[in-house]
Length: 132
Image (cartoon, rainbow, N blue to C red):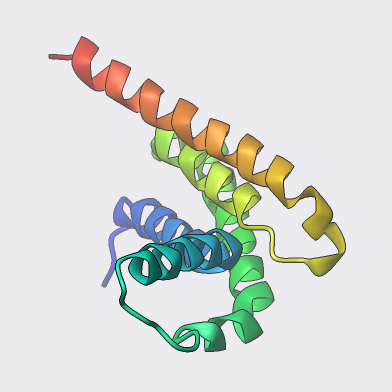
């Protein structure tokens, strides 16, 4: 049986994992960069071995958004979830918006999401360093 104290942590972890899975566009660009780098070194990669994930990007992102909402509600009610991780997860979900209707704004989402993620990491590090 899962204790009530562990449930918010599990929900936060699932939210983070789902948001990473939903951010396929960022992953796609990283993969293209890797394929380019390998090509420059003379290694040829044919096809996209993870292309099957594109068909389930919207459902995965939707689950990530739902879990982020649940995590945020748990944070508001119980204050037992790390604000830094909530901030980082929010940035990941924002950066990973998979809808084709807003793809022309994707660089803006990546930038804002990346800035939110960076802010969460910086705040996390500062808090850790200030506590010794």
